[in-house]
Length: 163
Image 1 (tube, one colour):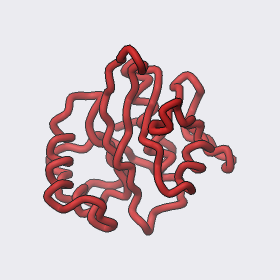
Image 2 (cartoon, rainbow, N blue to C red):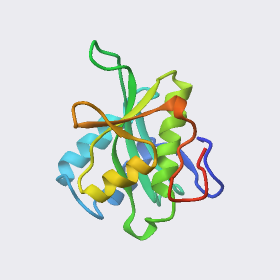
Image 3 (spheres, helix red, strand yellow):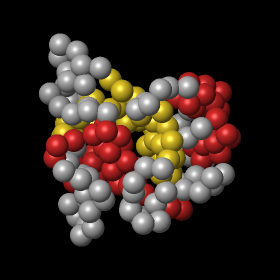
C-alpha cells in the first residue's frame, strides 16, 4: 500500500485488477478496447517503480494511472513518467487525481528519480490544473515536469496538502 491521505487507498495494480481497470477506462474510452487491454497487460508486467497505480477498493477502482521509469538521456534527466491518469467521472473534483499524482511522486522519491513527467495535456483546463500542482512545461512544449524536491504535491487553489 502506498501512503496516501485518509480514505485514499492507492496500491500497485496486479493481474487480478485487469478487468476492473479496463472497465474503469472504458467509461470514457480514448483507445479501442483491444489497445487498452494490451496497454494494461503490458503495464502490469513492468517492474517497479513502473506499473499501474490503482486508487479505490479492490474490484471497484475509482482512479488509476500508468507510471514508467524513463532513464536519463543526454537531453533529459531521469524521471518517473505518468500517463493515462484517469478518475471515474462520478469521483472527480474530490482530490483523487491529486492523490494519484502524490503517489507517483512518492514512488519517484523512493526510486531516487528527481522528476515526475507527463505529456502536456489537452484541454487547457487540465494544463492549468497541473501547473497549480507544480508541473512546469519544459522547453519542448511537449512535456511537463515536476521536481520531486519541490515538496509534497498540493493544489495551490486548495488548502489541503497531499503528501
